[in-house]
Length: 194
Image 1 (cartoon, rainbow, N blue to C red):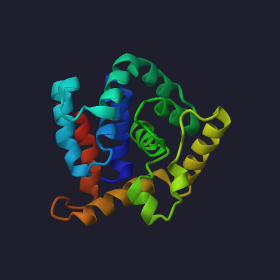
Image 2: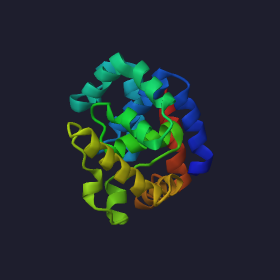
Image 3: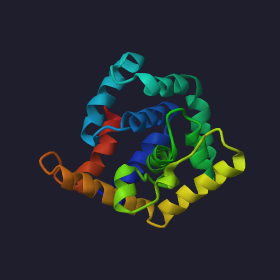
């Protein structure tokens, strides 16, 4: 299932409730420095045990705790966003999310922006500075960094970033993944784990 097929289903699920949005953010945070195939088991454990999940620790625990207090406001901010920049800013308020993972949240929540992770950074020859953002910087500097990140995503298209990343992951581990569509489809499956 390509971006065009699976992403609208993911968007619809994430936009149904603040709880679904919080689960989406946790999936993104759980994916930090983890192989994509491991995220499914982590999501299952997190959904069963919440704060007691063995995968919710350190900075991931900070994200979890923040979401418990702020998921309704985050959901409203994301739903009320009319621009990519506003949507990015909504997700950047979450502890543990930098530009790449906030961009991933935008993809999952609304099919916008995109995730320029380490894999994409290397293969697309993008300067690492595109990913750097000090959340305590001046508002004008923050806006410029967000705009530069969005521009880097738009120059490649959100759908292309998704589909090509999924194909790359499948190619790297063909014993685990049938193809890029398989990698793409499990994004939705991970979110729906009970």
